[in-house]
Image (cartoon, rainbow, N blue to C red; front, side, top):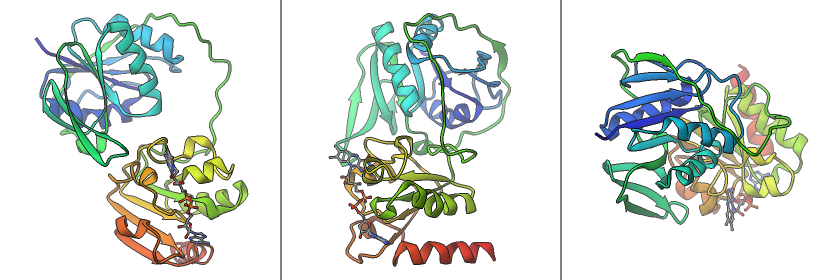
Length: 297
Ligand SMILES: Cc1cc2nc3c(=O)[nH]c(=O)nc-3n(C[C@H](O)[C@H](O)[C@H](O)COP(=O)(O)OP(=O)(O)OC[C@H]3O[C@@H](n4cnc5c(N)ncnc54)[C@H](O)[C@@H]3O)c2cc1C
């Protein structure tokens, strides 16, 4: 019988993926790597691995391969961390993999964007197991209710890499891929200190995350992990504010699931205005302090 294992890094990740799991329509178990798996999302079993820290990708993939038996589908929310692990898991299981799923036609036919989102491919998987990463914004929030059986599960894997240290920038800001508000800045932010005070400051005032274009990252204005777009993170916030962002197809590929896109650009012909819900033709160094002053009031 077909069954899905939804793999989540933490409970919030599990809730995000559960919308997909419910739409797939197969019975599923939810495995939470850290924290306690939610029991009210319609999973048959809420499995908690109880890890304090997620191990490096090869060890985690090895551990997951040990619990993958019996599942025809294994899925996680699309993110850098899950793509790294699930690709290895697919290799270990000799399974087909479909990344960035945005729609389900049947348990073996999925839709995914290619060429920076300008083409939607329909992919049929001819064998099981199949490993999937899914874009949660495409599937909405799960229906809560019902009680799953809560169980602990041990992941015993071995890897060839050892994590020596881990560091995160951005302090207490929410994770970019899960934030309800994202404020992004582009090349005109000049340097890291300006980016942090102008973009970071507005993000903090709105309780959101800071993001950046690749041009800003390549110029050393913003850290690599803040890059949004085709080769960065895919975001889907309620509100996306792009300040000094031209609106390249590669950047737009990462933000098109945002509910409301607000662009601040001093060039009225900037391409971002073609895709923004609200546009402000203004110098960001005038507009953002003014917005912050109004928010303060
Ligand atoms: C294979 C490939 C993958 C890529 N992947 C990504 C990706 O994932 N993400 C990504 O972002 N890019 C990506 N890029 C790069 C992308 O093509 C663009 O070069 C990049 O997005 C441009 O960044 P930008 O908008 O910050 O810079 P620019 O194109 O330089 O635009 C700056 C904008 O700021 C405006 N501006 C200037 N000063 C001000 C001011 N004071 N106030 C208000 N507005 C101002 C200008 O009018 C302009 O529109 C990729 C490119 C390639 C080839």
